[in-house]
Length: 108
Image 1 (cartoon, rainbow, N blue to C red):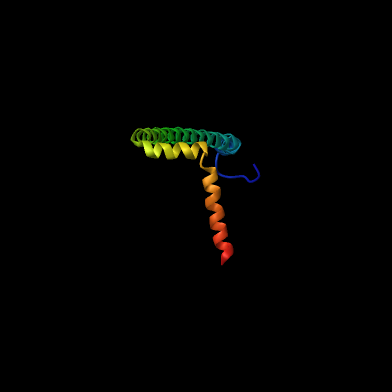
Image 2 (cartoon, rainbow, N blue to C red):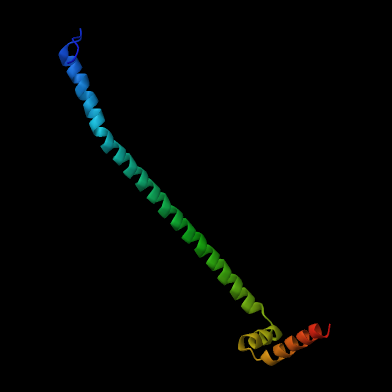
């Protein structure tokens, strides 16, 4: 001890050892706290990922259901028009229409 005091040397040694122990354990306690925080954050991340997947599955089922309902409700005329668009059999008609529009702009 640097200065003589009226406190028993054993008491001051015990307090000093306790302080050293606390200071020595501080990095380990801090790392433990960081690891717990990271584990908690990772858990929340996975919970959010599962929730997003569930919502996406619900949206997919709803969209599929709407598509099937539309397929079953289409009449034959609309089906023929859709088939023409898919098969692109009306390409010549589309090109003729485009040429007509372009000629209309040229005349102005």
